[in-house]
Image 1 (cartoon, rainbow, N blue to C red):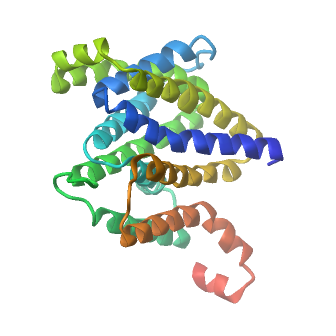
Image 2 (image 1 turned 135 degrees about the vertical axis):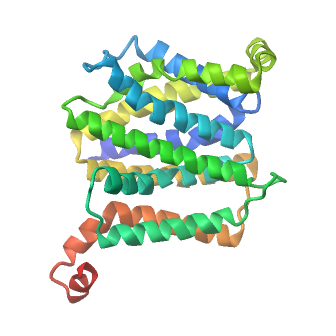
Length: 307
């Protein structure tokens, strides 16, 4: 990629990394499920004016939106509202890459390679080290329920990836238009769940007394992280091989962890940093393992690894 496109990639990394800190600020004033409803309603309402409707049956909007939109962000927002630090959330959510691979192996019968086994093993050990700090009740740190819910968010994202791949295999485009127009689907289940579990009084109070910090957070999530971020992402994917663009997401947790350290003074134990490093190594090996083995196909140790 050229300088311009590399800079655009950096914009996406920073925008999506900061998104977790911004979300944490918004969740201080707005219940998580209500925040999800507002987020998707505004993405759909604003984005539909600028993005053409995708040329596919509405049923595929639903297949994509339920795991990728509703379930992923319901789990994530509730996790962050219940003791999951924003920085660690940005990292643990990247387990979606590993979950996507496992689901593809089981459901799509894709072949698993040796480097993928290594990637999964590194990520699992890393997540285990991170989880060691989790408490059943959040007492100034990461809660166990927050960590588990974030893993469910990552799993939901993975199912969303599989649905996007299935849509693409049918000849439709799983691009920004699908992201925007399928955002009309999640607000209804979010609102139903919000009234059921957060309560009508909490919903009405939050709407009538919403503060400027929450408004700013919602505006950032809708305009910058979603519409601008996915627009640039779609542009990069359309111009460059996915193998070059997709690994950029590895920079998101780096930005998220750094920003949360400065904004919220989040502190990780030494073994958690080791876990962070192992997860990132697992993600890197998953992204570049095939090329690494290919580059060593004539080397003796490369033949050993493939055996």
